[in-house]
Length: 137
Image (cartoon, rainbow, N blue to C red; front, top):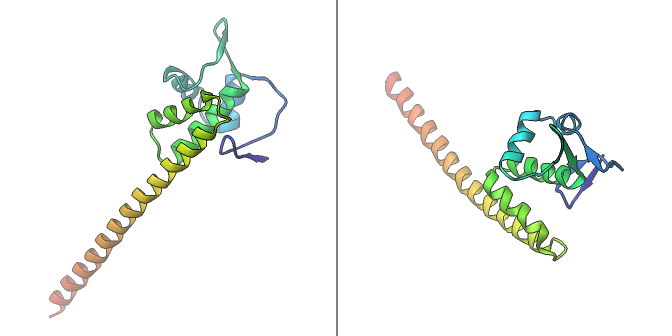
């Protein structure tokens, strides 16, 4: 397995140019319904052969971005905005820069949440100790 820094999600190297819904469901550990949902949301665009969806290498890379973004707490709208930056024709420089900035902002927000949670833990611990001391008196 290789880590492709372009997709920011581990992808197994493959020479395949197209993939079926079952292939990608298995590879990414998601349901076919999830893939259809991402299509409905406009995040991927498989071509059709009758009722059969045929996913491209591009769709596969976009699914990797979607899953990475979800695992990092980004909304599907945010992920869609980042995916749309791929096609600007600047060798993905804008996509990388904007994604890095959004990640840094998310880190900042999570650090703030973490400090709030730690403060609440401290308050609860002090309150529990005070209650126990009062009960023992």
